[in-house]
Amino acid sequence: MGWLRMVVVGLMVVIIAHKLSKMNKEPPLPTLDPNPWWAPGEPQQEDVSINRFNINFSKKEVDDLKARLALPLRLTPGLEDANFTYGINADTLHTIVQYWRKKYDWNKRQTRLNTYPHFKTHIEGLDIHFMRAGAKAGSAKNVKVVPLLLIHGWPGSFVEFYDILPLLTNPQEGSSVVFEVICPSIPGYGFSQGSSKQGFGQLEAAQVFLKLMKRLGYKQFYLQGGDWGSLIASNMATMYPNNILGIHVNMFTINTPGANLKMVLGALLPAGVVVEEEDQHKLYPLSTFVSMMARESGYLHLHATKPDTIGAALNQSPVSLAAYILEKFSSWTHRDNLHQPDGSLLQQHFPISLDAMLDNICIYWFTSTITTSVRLYAETFNKNFVSKSLDNIPCVVPAGLVTFAHESVNSPKSFASHKYYNIVTNNDQATGGHFAAMEEPALLATDLHQFVNIVEKKRT
Ligand SMILES: *[C@@H]1O[C@H](CO)[C@@H](O)[C@H](O)[C@H]1NC(C)=O
Ligand SMILES: *[C@@H]1O[C@H](CO)[C@@H](O)[C@H](O)[C@H]1NC(C)=O
Image (tube, rainbow, N blue to C red; front, top):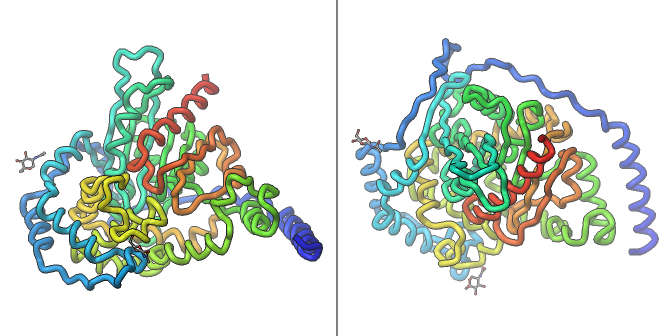
């Protein structure tokens, strides 16, 4: 590093530090309308009953899906040797659609999805769905039952959690807690109704989920989430610290002035000065990170600006919907999967079963929710939400952070303290990607147990 560069970096540090010291005033907690109405029309008296239901799509709906899958495919052959680098590969999609038509058995899968009881209740005008997985402490001694709100993301759903739930609800070696788990569907996803009015974003979802937990009798509970789940959980922990015992997230990006300054300085200064050596690969070289983001984040811009257009294109055909979602399963489990002819999706070692991915796609299809699901981006990446500056309001509840090796976007460990002021665990896992609950349920469950055990020990 030449002396000139040293001087330039030094000057930058002084200028930026000066600017930061002026702007480190914490923004106030945003105020939300405590009783909005998101359903069509004028507010009405709300029925607050909680009703059990089975997932049970009619024969007509299932036959309709089969008929659509049986239509001749209109796939454009992929470019020679392009694999997934231009998006999903046509041959792979063809193979999966044939499997979906001929081998995948919805009725059997539906029975599996009903292993846990499903419920709906009304909140702020919307039908809100949740699945409940009861704690099974059994005869285990000295095991405490603690409530957990477990929140999915996009393009996921409550389907993400079937493999991890037994590891949370049953006693585990070395853990003195078991979880009573509530898995809701984010409004606009699966069986939770989408808003009919503009302005329902992740903060509004946080308020709905707090009301849900209170209605179920939980004044205080733990949170776990990835993707949107981690953002909604983070908002809940920031907005309602008195209700949250601890937050555990398997995806976090820290977007505060301090963390952003570290990101820039980390690119200019030698490894280890700002960002730990073992965390360098999460961001640097910055050019690799930026080009990866440019390549992989087009969907985000589209969702954030024209959700109804992409929604219309995807909701008309199950093949189109599957193409869009499967590509994300491929690239978000490992970014190099795009260099495999089948995006790794059909390989024996792919960490998520084809059946589980199709279950998830079926939920989007049967409930016809792809459009409402992607509107969440438009309600988040806008002036109204950004101006609330939630990233700059500290989260003071105990936090457990975990980074899976192939997560699409990671922050170095040392950035986390700019948002989370009470970090209890902050672990790296050597395997796994964006869909941690599906890919590495045991690692995620163990990490969560470890975090909650430490927090519980401190509480008593
Ligand atoms: C689904 O609905 C059908 C027809 O109403 C009924 O016969 C069947 O028992 C239901 N299955 C489940 C799992 O609720
Ligand atoms: C596509 O996959 C083939 C076979 O694995 C490989 O040889 C080739 O380099 C890959 N090309 C791209 C662009 O990913």
